[in-house]
Image (cartoon, rainbow, N blue to C red; front, side, top):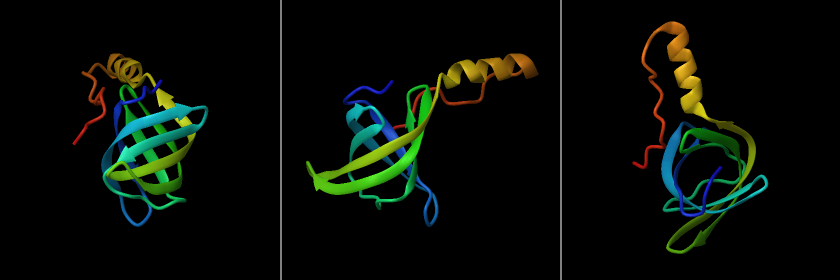
Length: 106
């Protein structure tokens, strides 16, 4: 699902929507550890955009590490194979898919 070293985008929703790039450090079970240049607050709901999907969860910790911040997330939902969903919708309504298939690394 998610590989170590994969670039992802984290979006937080508390107090407005904030988005930042990150790199996967570790993913095991429902625990996802990311390295990012900025911090986020524990308890914030997050969306993590991955290649061909997204993960929804909550930040459980954020500590300084490796010239940035180690962010620990508990993943609650995984939405995978979004390209297949976009193609199905496109076929049903007769249009081209409008969903980005790879997480934007801006």
